Image (tube, rainbow, N blue to C red):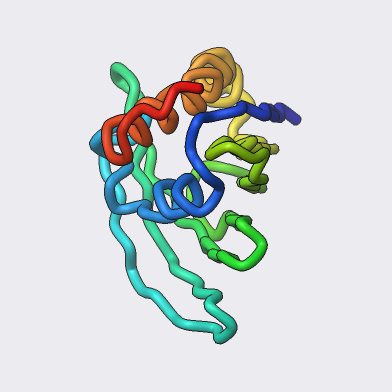
Length: 153
């Protein structure tokens, strides 16, 4: 089963990076492979937590698939938990963490574990997904710089 994890230090505080990643409706503007994202519904859970259900369409050349996920936003812990609900995967587990490191910096942790239902699709898309995940950190950091400004230390 393919998985990918990365921790990237960025020059933005955890609260800002959490807000940026939590703003899923904006993903088509800057996230690699994300062609569309539609939030079906959103519910407040209390204690600042909320959950949303979203459809994300990923596209690359002739490949185009939509999958549905449950996204739990946990701002007091600077954590985002993504659970797969429906689509071309057998399973998908994704987690984001944001840990302040002082002086306006934080470590952004990204973990994803997935398996396509179809072995053929997995073979076809595996290398491309791995390459895209490696670009995710940079895409979010560049988006943060554009929104919050660069704060190079």
